[in-house]
Amino acid sequence: MNSTLWLRQLSAFGVRLTKRLQPTVINASCTGRPLHVHPQLTTARVIDGKAIAKQIKDEVKVEVAQIKEAGGRSPQLTVILVGSDPASVVYVRNKIKACVETFGKNAVVCGRSKNVGLPIAVFLHGDGDRGSLSGDATTTICHRYTPAEQLAVFTKTADIIVTAAGVPNLLTADMVKEGVAVIDVGINRIDDPDKPGKTKLVGDVDFAGVAEKASVITPVPGGVGPCTVAMLMKNTLLAYKMAANLPH
Ligand code: ADP
Image (cartoon, rainbow, N blue to C red; front, side, top):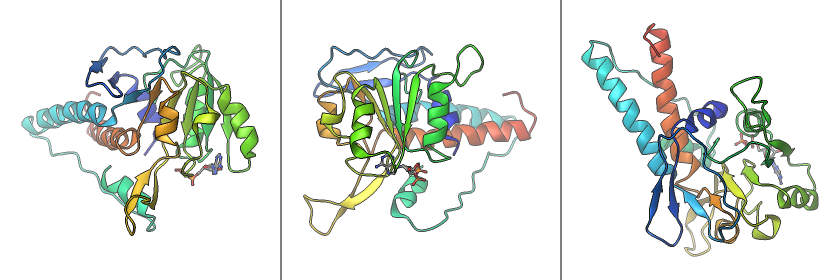
C-alpha cells in the first residue's frame, strides 16, 4: 500500500471529527479543505477513521456499480501475506494529510520505513510551490537510533506528530505540547493488562494520556487502519481504470 497516496487522497475527502466525551459529530467532509488545528482545545477531537473509510468505500462502490452496469468486470484485488506477524494479519484482513493544516508547521515523524515513515515525511516536508506532495511543514524524522530524550525534545516542539514505529507507548503525554495533532500509524498487538491471557491492538501512542493535550488524535484501532483499507479499494479501482483505459 502506497502510504503517500492514501495521505494525499485523504485530503480530498475531508474528515469526520468526533469530539471526545461529546456525542456531537462535526462533519467536515468533502470540503477538500484542510481543517486547522485549534491549540486552545484541551480535549482532543478523535479522527473517526471508520467514518472516513465508509465515505471512501461508498464512493468506490458507486463507481464499481457503474463499471459493471456498462458491461465491465469487477476490479479485483489479490492479497499476498508475507510472514506471520499478527499485526500484519490484522492489517491485511481489515484492510494523512489527515485534514490537519501542515503548512509552516513543525512536524515530527517517528519511523523511517520505506513504506510508511519515509513517504509520510516526504509528503509533510514537500514544497507546495513545486509539486503535489506538499505539506510545507518543517519535518524531523526520528528512528530507532534517536535517543529517547532527543525524541522528546523534537516531539515537544511539534505541531504534528506521526508515529509509525511499532513501539507501544512510544509517545506519552509528557512528550507533547498542548494542541498537537497526532496521527498514530502504529499497530501493535500486546498482552491485554485487563484480560489475562488475551491480547489487544494498540498504536504507538498512549492514547488516553496524549488525548488530554492533543487537539486532534487518531485512535488505534479505528483511526488510520480503516482509511488504509478504504484507500486500498480506491487505488484498486484506479489501477483497474488505468489498465482498462477508462477515464480516471
Ligand atoms: P513500518 O513499515 O510499519 O513503518 P518498520 O518496522 O519497517 O515498520 O519500521 C519501523 C520504524 O520505526 C523504523 O524506521 C525504525 O527506525 C523506527 N523506530 C523503531 N523504534 C523507534 C523509536 N524508539 N523511536 C523512533 N522510531 C523508531
